Each structure stands twice: as structure tokens, then as C-alpha cells.
Length: 251
Image 1 (cartoon, rainbow, N blue to C red):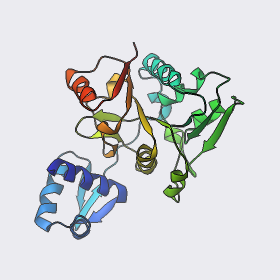
Image 2 (image 1 turned 45 degrees about the vertical axis):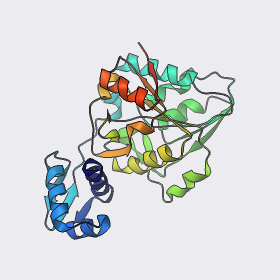
Image 3 (image 1 turned 90 degrees about the vertical axis):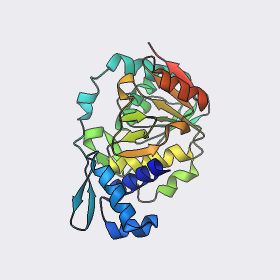
């Protein structure tokens, strides 16, 4: 329970940016002593820092998209190919922004009838060549470092779409902190999509596991299908079996 409370507290701080201790007490309905203890524990991670009367989120600089694209590139292509094989006719799918998820479109059959919902510029550019794909874009602000469109004035607009499969990316994946990312502007979109989709597909190469960043947009147990590039540790295999997560290893 304490670990979950700490994660909720940390997520809230990152979502609002800067917040006073009094506001945290009111929002979480706990005493100031409890908030101080929890905040001090989170401070040790270096993801937040103290300011006068409260705390503020610390967001590290994102690695430019073009640099991330060269990391583990062959593995990412194989993961994208496997994900594409799981798409079916008439699916309405969400494809997240990321250097792994961007590879899905090039492996889709040209005759397949489906709808793609995305905030990824690369996915948009790839999908326009497919006459049988209905393309729906989301996000009203372009973020160059991630080649993604972020920020939706009303997140409830996503509720009208019956998303059959959500192909998600993550900066880090861990059992303790789930699916995490570093971009506050993308966080709300990822979180809403993961909650709304009928099935969540996580695409993550082996380098992402055992790591976490500031923002958890979904716990790992909410993943339905996990597609990765290498054999995972026994701990992750046991977790997948326990939570009935279908696992694909792309070598």
C-alpha cells in the first residue's frame, strides 16, 4: 500500500509540476508528517526537488529522437514486424510515438482494412501511403524531440474511440513502477489510451527492462501482450505467467 501511495504521490507531483505540502495533504487526505516522510523518500530518487513550501518535478532532458532511433535498431524492427502480424482486418488500433512502434506500419499488408489512431509524425507519414487505412491524428502541439503531437485540450475526446489494440512504447519498464516515460506532455495521452483500449500491447526492447522514469502511465499487470527482443529474467517470466500476459521474444 505504501509503495502504491508513493507512486501516486510522485505521479501527481509530475503531473502538476510544482505543488505545496499543504496541497498534497489536502489532495491525498493525509497528515503533513506523512507527506513529509513520503516526499523525503521520493527526493532520494532525484525525480523531484524541494522548493519553498513544497516540491517541484525534475524532468531530465530527453534524448533526441534521431539519436534514440539508432539504439538497438535491428531489435526494434523485429519487434515492429511481430506487432504488425498481430493486427487484424477492421481493427481500430492506437500506435504510440516511439522508435520501436514506428516500425509497425511498414509491415502491415497493403490490402488490410483498418483504422490507425496516432500522435506519431513518423506513423502518420508512413500510413498516408496506404489507401485502405483510415488515419486519425491526435494532439495539437508538435514536440520535435520526440516527433510526436502532444497536449489534448479535452482528453475525453479519446473516449469515443473503441480502440481494439493499443501498441505502446515506454522509456522504462519495471515490475515495481510499470510502464514509465519522461515526458509530462505525453503522459496523459498514454495513460488515457492504456485505460481505454481493449488490449494493451507493450513494445519494448530488452534495454528498457528494470528501468523506470518519473511518470507511470500504466502498471505492468495491465499489459495483455508483451513484445520484446531478448529472453527476460525469471522474475519477468513469472510475472507474465501470473498475470496471463502473452509474451513474444523476437530474436
